[in-house]
Amino acid sequence: MSEKIEAQSGGGLDTLKWLIVMVLFSGLVAANYHYEEVSVLYRALAAVAVVVVVGFIAATTNKGTRFLGFAKDSRTEVRKVVWPNRQEATQTTLIVLVATLIMALILWGLDGIIVRLVGFITGIGF
Image 1 (cartoon, helix red, strand yellow):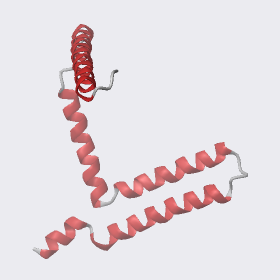
Image 2: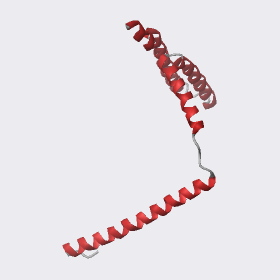
Image 3: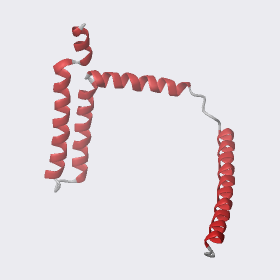
Image 4: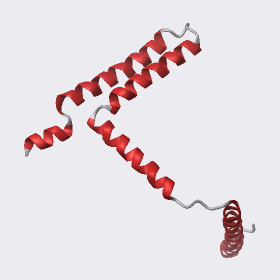
């Protein structure tokens, strides 16, 4: 049973990979700060290269593999969604705008009534 749990968690190799990821990210931040006289283009290209390498390393861990599986499943589910056409989207937007306008007018009217009522009770004219 414990071997099964240890195999699922990835053990020490996953920990080593995450440590490498953190060291590479820290090195990227330090290098970006240290080499600020170097062109932004070169620093950005180096940052992209480091992020790609870190992404590959992180993807080989247990958590990274599970995340990639989740992302693939999510993409599959998004493809199954029936998206509204342009007319449906426009109609829904108009309904929301009208409902918002009506609620705004109701709240504005209630606010005006309450202000006048409080002004009448306290004797302070607004």
